Amino acid sequence: MIGNLIDIKDFRIKFAAARKNVEMTQSQVCKKLKISKSTLVDIENYRKDVTTEQLEKFAKIYKVPDKDLFFLKKDSN
Image 1 (cartoon, helix red, strand yellow):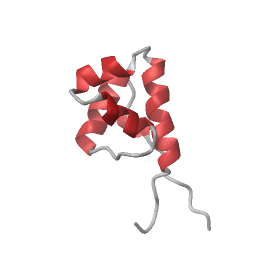
Image 2 (tube, helix red, strand yellow):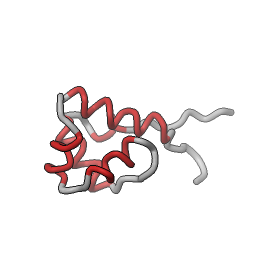
Image 3 (cartoon, rainbow, N blue to C red):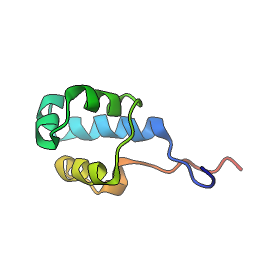
Image 4 (cartoon, rainbow, N blue to C red):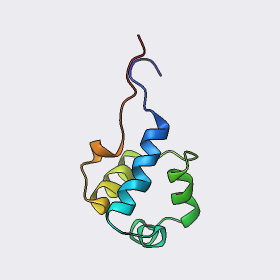
């Protein structure tokens, strides 16, 4: 992808931190999102991407704007 890139590590770390900030377990999030625990673990550990729809659901559950769940990588130029 050309232009701004998503810094995947910051993106995934924010998912786990956001979940912990609302004091939810992985199991609780999985139940609300109707996803498997292995899927959530993969998302939180950089192994799986999320769709825009999933991102919106995570933001609602974690009580943060969806834009706060990821950061654009700064241009190195």
